[in-house]
Length: 491
Image 1 (cartoon, rainbow, N blue to C red):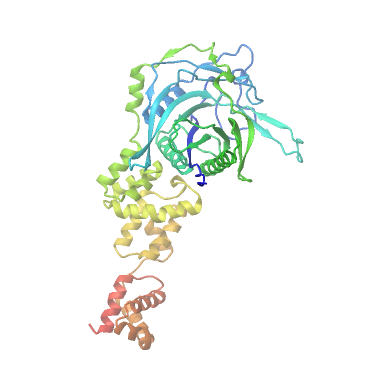
Image 2: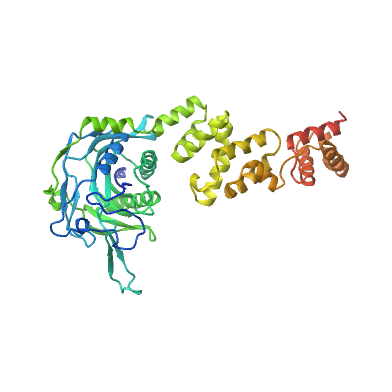
């Protein structure tokens, strides 16, 4: 009998990303927004859902929504309305969430990713919609063995915070593509200044929908929605786990059901939360306390004209104007603050590649070591340029320049002042250098000098190192090498 072939499955992934908007007040009331404020200190009758309290739309939140929609190449609705999404949960005091159902603010957009599809074309993902809504409060589940005895506390400071939910199409075909999508989306949003985009603070959250189907089949499989994903790394890990689980169930002859799952990062597995809801379960209906209103085209064009240069265009400009490598341009543009710092530095020193080498190299290393952002470093473009010029002029060498840099980013002083404090400046004293060169040649005449005369180039590096040690690094290695070679060769 012929052996049965194993079914090859294809994942289908769509992501829902919730972005808290960085407005001064909440979506439908005047309460302020402050992460870490005392519990329930930023509330009022509107966000508490008290009888008779009426909501009013935050204009800035709508403008930020338009800003996001335009950056994602979306159509902007001419008229919008808000709807009630009904469900009960302790941190939803009204018993419903004001959201948008059938008339979202933004729709039919695309996000181009820095990867290619199977045919070698740039990978493009559709943005089905981006709609405005209010956030729920926060439930704090107490440890059963600690204070509170397993009870749940509710903090309603977050209730009513303006959100925009960005719903991506089912266009992603692997956990890695989902990871790239999220990083690309976050990069683009960071240029807009509408959110601090912190997953740690909850201002950027993601739910992942995943199903599998036999490769080549058009019909989608039964999907799961995964929640409690607190990092992009978790999104990737959860999707990998769920794809394996779906595959194992189907290959064993079992069936899948549509459900909502929670991700347990400690156990690296999902667990059931509830059966997946359909839109009908939420009993959507138009919000009776908020009228439908127009979105004037003049307003949309005003917002469009205020958009910054977006990453894709900035990257092309870096390639054309600064002649950077693709890798360096992609990296620097990936962080708006870093790209701004780079451009301010280039404005002070017309050597874009040399500046880029420092930004991608030592600056990035310092940021990674400190787990910091460029604004956290006590480093100005002027100080970085001053350091590079000291290196170019021979006042520092590659080793001492890096030593000065790593002190400079912490003390906030310039490169020259720091180099003087560290006694790292190379003061040209030819007689002192000549004396050390003669001393090293005499000391290693039997081995290294003989090896160099025999044609072993690495012996010269050893002799340079010995001279640098005796000169305490205050010399130019290239010039030392020339001196040593000339002295040995009798020039």
